[in-house]
Image (cartoon, rainbow, N blue to C red; front, side, top):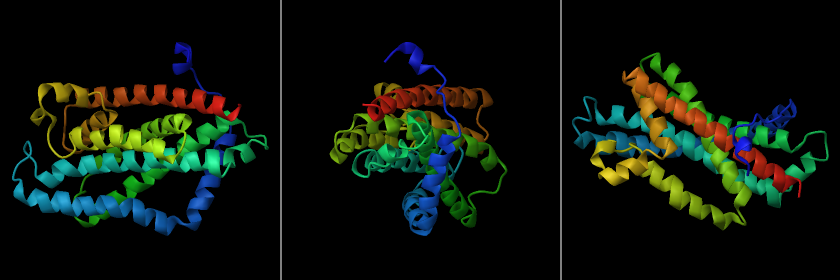
Length: 262
């Protein structure tokens, strides 16, 4: 892959929105079940970790444990829902259902397919975030306009992991291939990105590794927004997410385009 392709601007028209609409129409038929499952697991974590374990932790850098954990829960929800939609969902449409091959019989091309699918996976991740946010309101965890400032960052994080998921879809040979990306990347990120404990509790070497994870920057940015963090550092984390999203998006476009045109 050429370096210039990493920073190019994909040529996408309104066909991408048609692809997104197709996914949304299908989602509308099963939205209750879909939202139930993508929201239920985070809510269980909220109860078991946030309130359960949190009852034994008095102070996390000047805040309660539930206040510390909740921003990370929003970020991991965005990551997991977008990633799994970008992998298992897209791989099914690419190979078993042959959905993309059928779409390409119309005027919609490979770029529009990729653009629409990336936007859909990001949207589904954001739906999960909104579901958890609504539940958190009833628990009294959100009483500030700051959540409105955090939502664009959470959508950006969903977009990044939809792109990462699509990249792994482009190299997967079967469903079992996703075990490597899940166990080798997603699970370590969910544990070592400042989600359950501060990064300064990690050994120095692992701390540097953690800063290579995009989830680390998402958690730091959202936590900073919700709890009056340093605006400069919040901006740095957001810029890192923007750069990573742009690069991963272009990699996904190039790889899936080649796969569809074989």
